[in-house]
Structures are given as C-alpha cells and as structure tokens.
Image 1 (cartoon, rainbow, N blue to C red):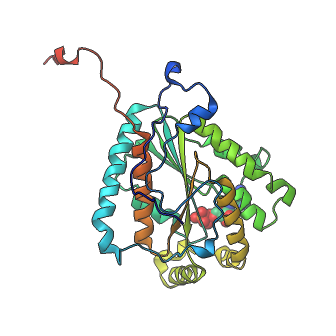
Image 2 (cartoon, rainbow, N blue to C red; image 1 turned 45 degrees about the vertical axis):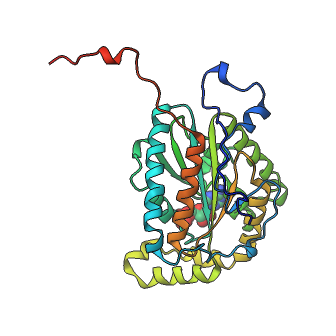
Length: 305
Ligand code: ADP
C-alpha cells in the first residue's frame, strides 16, 4: 500500500452545519467536502485493487515492541479524547468506525485500548451477531441503519453491514445473485450517511492464519480466556481462503472517498492499536469539531450566593 507521498496533512472542511445557508449546493459538492484523512498509510484508495497476501500482517514500521509505542499511543488517545469532547459539544456531525476482522483478530481489544478514557456519554459500541428473525424479515441494512450515530456521537460497529457480504457469502446463506448486489447497496448506504454529516472509516484488522492459531491455542490454555473460545471459530477457520477472497472483494469494491477502508497489520496488537488510534485521531481532526459559542453577555453574569 502506498504511503503519503509528501507526508503533508491535507485537510478539507467538513460541512458541519445544520444550517441550510452553509450547506453545499449539490450532492457531489458536499461529498467532495468530506474530510480527507491525513494519514493514508494502509488506506485503500478508491479503485485500488489490493491483494491481502501482499500486505504483511507482521509489519510495525520502526517500532519493535510495546514500550516503543507507549508514549505515541498515549498522545493519540489524548487527541481522541479532546476531539471527541468537541464533537459531542458541537452536536453537528458524527463519526462511524467500522471494525471487521477474522475471529481472534482483535476487534474487542482495539476498542478497549483505543477508546480508553473517552467520555462514555459520547461513544457507543454496537456488536452485530447472527441476525434475529425480525432483522432477517427486513432488508439487510435495516439493523445497521438503526444503530448509526446521531449528531455528536462516535459510534463503533463491532462487525457491520459487511457481514452480509462476508459470512453470508462464504457460508452461502443467500444465493450469489443476492449478495452480489449488496456491494452497491452498501456504497449507497454509506453515501447517504456521509451526506448527512456522518464521517465513516472502516478497519480490517489483518492477522495471519498462523497468528489466529496461536491466539486460539492461548485461549484454550488460559482458563480466564475460556469464555472467549468458541468451537465455531475452529470450524470457520477451515474457510480461511474463502474469507480472504470475500474480504478482498469487500475492501476493493467498497473503499470510497467518503468511506475508506484501512487494512491494518494486526499480528502485533500494540502496533494495531497505534495505527487505529492514529487514524481515528487524524479523522476527527479533519472533521474539525468546534465548541459552540456560549450565550451572549456571559461576562456580565454574576452567580448569586
Ligand atoms: P464476535 O466474534 O464478533 O466477538 P460472536 O463470537 O458472538 O462475536 O460472533 C458473532 C457471529 O455472528 C459471527 O460468527 C458472525 O459471522 C455472525 N454474524 C454477524 N452478522 C451476521 C449476518 N449478517 N449473518 C450471519 N451471521 C452473522
């Protein structure tokens, strides 16, 4: 994946206003105004056709161990906390973070490490499991749209609309002619959210098959991790190559300017946390949330005894 060539930050103004007069005239103009992230490392550019086999899940830049990233991770978390507070106060736009990974890929660990210290009032995590009968009776996007962020919120999807072109495709839960149309539907759905002041970023936490084996074995060995072990994960592992093909298609067909995919090397948990934290902090910064002005004349107010 290409690095940022000049290393410079490119910021564009997000239309953050609910005010009609500040709203761009056309849909394409509004989408152009979506924030462009300033840390494109690992970002899949629209139209790019990546091969997961070409992306090394062991990569960690110049960092060698957890201690090497400790200070940097703290800096990124501080940025997220500050920007999230502004976003919450501003109440004009929202951020949707989509997390996808193979079993044991580290979605839960990423959430707890990256969002440590964030005000829980402004942050929601929604896990998506096997759909209920009611969910299956609706269009596949219904349950995701319902959980999308309201203004001011950071919402994390732990699994997402992409399951409907991943597990559903790999396990033949619907015919091919049904899931094939879903990439376009997902792109349209995300475009609709983007047009309504939601910034979207999507992470695929990329681990190797050998690393998954190590993680499953360590769950088996440690009684405090038994609750995390599911025999179903072992069964799903047999479909590894099919999942890789399905992920490749999802990432290649659905990385758009307004909802980019990032393929994050995730064998090293500490590096994965750093990359995700840095990308989220940069995204929030590009959204440029502002504290709203206070009432007029605050300087004259005296609080009575
Ligand atoms: P997680 O692995 O996310 O921590 P679980 O172990 O409960 O949580 O697994 C959730 C399961 O739900 C996964 O096997 C996933 O493939 C499945 N799932 C999620 N969305 C769908 C869907 N739309 N259709 C079928 N299965 C789904």
